Image (cartoon, rainbow, N blue to C red):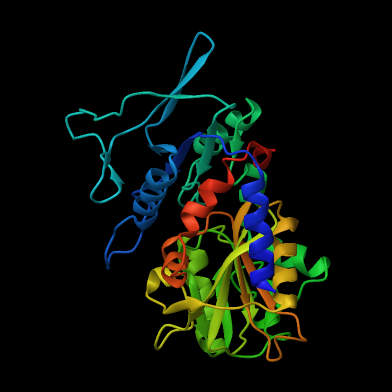
Amino acid sequence: TRGLILEKFKSFITEQKEEAYKLVMFHNSHEHLRDVGKQDAPDYKLMTKAANTVGVDLFHAEFQGSRIEEKGDKLFLHSFAFDEKTGLSIKPSEDGESDFQKPFEINPDNTLIFPRGLGTLGFTSNRRWVDMIKLLENKGFKTVPSIETWDACTSKYYCNELFRLNGLRTPKTIPVTYSDDSKRIMEDLKFPVILKASSGSQTGIGVIIVESLRSLHPTVQMLSLLTKNIDLILQEHIKIEYDVRVIVLRGNVIASMKRGLISGDARSNASLGAEVESIELTELELEDSIKAAKLVNGDLVGVDFLPSKNREKEQPYILEVNSMPGFSGIERSTKDKSVTSEILKTYMNRENWR
């Protein structure tokens, strides 16, 4: 089934006239909060390679320090320069010297915007960045994701309710309304449970498995103390060997991978070291993944789900939709093609900018 869908998708692409375009990929390249591990930027390198392969004029822009200049009827984007080896922007020195790239001319008729580093307000983003992308939309630019899609996907609780109300299957999820709310919530859940930040988690950081009320209650209290208005959710723990990430592009599934649990952990993020491989989806999994993407008006999204015991007959548990899915894991799982190149080729058809 997945093969048939991909063939129809490829046929659709080749029937349309391809036209070169410019691409601006925004980053918050210094966002990593972890104090361990390798801090590289795989998406920077993957996107650069893919753009060179398909002939897209790519400009990497750092949100911090970026600005848009109007000269007559033309727009120019200013951004810090990037270190091509690390994929990180070059921040100004202590004495105030800055290394900026040559201003990049942008136009809604030929420039696509990928705001990849928007993050979460108050956590890994700020309002000016969001306003800049929204104002570009107001000027007619196509942005992937749109601010509408990004906003919906920043809340796991909202998406859970949206999906459930529209017939998708989700794990039982309850918001923590105040620091001493744990006991009341556990009247409807059983241990172990998953404690998550509804917004603001980063590549699996911010997801905890909790075994008892004795651990849960003080953990919630401590998190609430450190971040007064943190939005936490508790979710039923569904025992699995793997979860699935599906890349949905304009209503079509173009790739899917299974991510094994990290040894001794409850998480399966490829960026944290989980083993990945391609997986064939069932009809139900295809339908529900596409439906989840449509519910957030997602142009290019990653849909995460837990497989059911009977994958052919039972709906999967939709976990969340990521409005800015990483590409490194899915590239590792698809040996026969470059998903990143396929994404860039899709937008050579201007009908896909609508």
